[in-house]
Amino acid sequence: MVEEVVGAIRSNPANEYAIAFTGLDFLGGSFKNSAATIFVTQKHWDERTQNVGQLVGELFGRTAGISEALVLAFPPPPISGLGSAGGFEVWLQNRGEGGSQAMAQMVQKFIAEAKKDPRLSQIQTLWSAATPQIFVDVDRERAKAMGVNVADIFNTLAAGLGTYYVNDFNKFGRTWQVLMSADQQYRNSPQDIGNMYVRSQTGQMIPVSALATVEFSSGPETLSRFNNLSAVKLLGDGAPGVSSGDALKAIDDTMKRVLTDDFTYDYSGASFQEKRASGSSGFALVLGALMVFLILAAQYERWTLPFSVLLAMPFGIFGALLAVWLRGMSNDVYFQIGLVTLLGLAAKNAILIVEFAVLKREDGLSAFDAALEAARLRFRPILMTSFAFILGVVPLAFSTGAGAGARTAVGTGVMGGMAAATLLAIFFVPVFYRLIDRSKQGGRVHGEPGESNDA
Image (tube, rainbow, N blue to C red; front, side, top):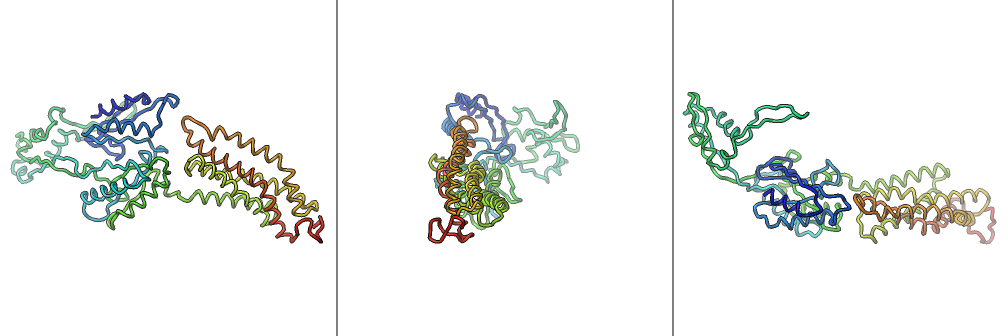
């Protein structure tokens, strides 16, 4: 089975090589007899003709004909160490009764409901409550009558089936475990369990078939816990064009419709960090604006004048949002970092105009004349510095190659915001200054009867 999947992976020219680890459940974080994990390394970015999403979709198509196994393909997590796959990770927790059967019913109910939501895709779980199992029922009374220690029976089964721990040894700078198991030909079928022998207290070798009954059954292969509750990990991703925040919102909506009082859920990995940091971008913007306000208030020694600078910032934010919307991009964390940077850039032009207006007011001009003269004097320097910056981030906004998504998000937001702050705010900042300075000084518009230039 693993060879078929590896063959499908190697058939794509974008993949360089694949390494398979049988028995490793990478998503569940455990070892299973019926699991395998394959790590695929792709070729250099310039040699690829498909992105990660297309490669994942192609692998699903190539392995759809394998009926003996469930093949899942997923990109790595965006931040190494936070989760095991891209997309979201959510744990469905059972805090009531019903055991694995109740959990299985709720998992299937949630997956069926989540697949109806157009904001979600690839909702999966590797957990199953009906995994084929072999149950060995040891007759303790018969074992005691035949002089066999029950612990010896269990040790014999562990040694024959590959879970008996012997010792550790050091080699190549690492510590290796020694686990005992019977040769493969002696543990291929359930009948081989009964053919194992246990030594009794009299030294007689007794087959396990005389002491235990081997039965076929089914049940969960692993029992995981999250927040000290019986839990199942669910994996998924947002639909194409849907941000991670909208995908998590879709999960919350689905959980509220599906879950009963005995069940709850919680996020892990990058999804948990994203939910925890939700709303922090707005707080960062407010804090940045507050810092600008306090610094300008100390510089101008007035509490009202800094507002003529702060009122120019919404133009930059509007331009950034418009640029991202026109390019069909999402409001991701990289764009939000660009917004925080944009606060200082948008305030820079307004500070230049207000600073010169304050100097002209000290020279005796009215608020109207001071604002007009400051805008005229600083118009050319503002355009020169602003367009130099905008043209400087054009390669960032239209970059390609590995990691281009982050650079494009930051560059697009900053470029659009700076363009709007330059082309719009330069005309409105003098108006803001005039209105705010008039309310403070009590002056009137230049040219009105009874007002001199010394007002």
